[in-house]
Picture (cartoon, rainbow, N blue to C red):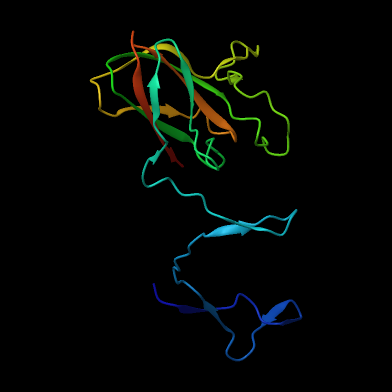
Length: 197
């Protein structure tokens, strides 16, 4: 679009109820479209810069749980300095499980380890099943488990099985998954996750 000029509706003064216009009373009208890029904002309370949250490009793969006995539960993620998932700024979460044995696995979303704070809260109830209200029933609030699957098929063996969790984990700052081997025998278990805005 190009800039244009237009006459101003009146001059700077009136005389006897009639407008008087000044010489060259044109007004420039800017009609340019300008692209902008949002890179973040400054927190008013702290003065700290907060960049825009972007979706993860690739899965973060956790260390392998080796020789997990039947009926035994493990927590993922488990790596040092990387032992929980922070969903701040993200909406959806994809998790992936790969095991060396076909069969069912229990998958439960739990509160992360008590070695970390939940925002500024400490100590937290580590390992507790995460509860919340996802669909209020006729004005009542019922806290229910956010994700608790006792028998999810993970097969065939040695392949990644990807599961998408939409929306319900988006406010969790200290998230882990408890994975229980219900295959009938020992196996290695791998876990990975990917967050989406």
